[in-house]
Length: 397
Ligand code: AMP
Image 1 (cartoon, rainbow, N blue to C red):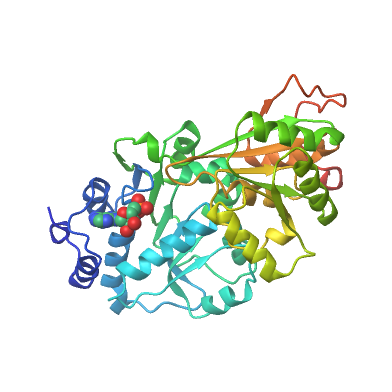
Image 2 (cartoon, protein in one colour):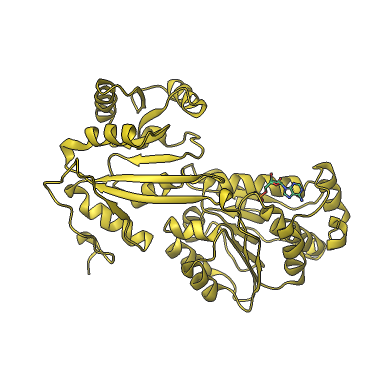
């Protein structure tokens, strides 16, 4: 079967020929006709199945067909694709650029962690398709930098991952702002109960498509925490590295001083590590990061500030040696793990002093994080069991 049988127009077919896409993949064969028909869709499909093209191609086709009769007003968008991470936003937007190169549609990736001004500037004239992470999108809507009254299509991509990462509240708030009349498409590696409940609230009478699971390519983040007395953290980290034979880890720590100290504590136990923190130049940080990505450096200790703005990519394992104060930082850090084809781990060291932070993080995630205990590291200052609907004192009414 060829792409032309699916009813795609010549400018799109030509772009696909150039990319040497000869035949649609299974998900594309099933999803493209449904999306073109205007129906809602729930598809269980993973990265690597060609799922991006399965929604991007028909969206391009539909938006370009209406393009001549449609003048986009300022700060308006016509299609919104919500994704869990900045990397995925960039990747999906690049695909839109490739598949739509012969069309006159505009697109933009929008994510947090960078200055929002250029993104606002680009929104002024309106944009056909936005690929965004939920937090930044909501920020922009609050600031009235974009309006949804002309939105036609909503895509929730990697819905399970967005829920794992605690984006449910942001997603709900975004959906409340959208016009009732719209097309909804939901893609998820697994259709868990949580995904189903999100779908029920968002999507009307959808067509369901399942593409056979290939468990090897399932991105999965396993989050767990270990309670520990403050003074035992570096011994615990060394123990885990050796005992579990870690090959690599990005270790987040609060202070520059703490980073340097931890590197020397690890070295005393025979573990070679490097650090990036605010005291090192951007150039040195970039170089260390490059070596880390190449595997020349196995263990990298980073302060949150030093890691901000650096392209860290996706990793097998991140460790919150110090639990971050901000819930957003936690979400951002765990989003570094769980790349396609491998499972990722996000491990947090939690001392009694971190209890309030822990409650805030778990409240946002909507579930408690699995706890592990090690006999070798008994805890003197016990961390209480979490309260899920925790409200910080200063926000109590
Ligand atoms: P995705 O599952 O969307 O992340 O896509 C996985 C990879 O498959 C991407 O690199 C796409 O460029 C590629 N791809 C998607 N559809 C096709 C196709 N029909 N033929 C060949 N390659 C494809």
